[in-house]
Image (cartoon, rainbow, N blue to C red):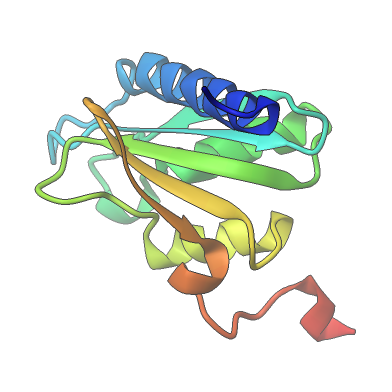
Length: 141
């Protein structure tokens, strides 16, 4: 039997996984064929999702995490409580370096980042593990 707090975490992860899977189905990845969905929970418990959107001019594509963060900000959210990234990779897919920094703008070093595949959550990291000794808003003073 799971403790009440564990039930809440499991329910949140299930909801994030479902949101990331739903939006991943809409990814625009005609060049790489690598569809990614991301979903995050903000400080109010709301879920925001995004998918990758590639572009023929490769550098101007958008990562799924960036889309989820933009959706959060557009809805008035300002803090990431947890984030899940869903992709079908040879190993668990974590945010790219630029997205790690984007996440850092709105998250604390201890924020959980879940890497998932179509079969479910594969790995869990903290932002600090993926982006150690990071530069964040507080660095500017």
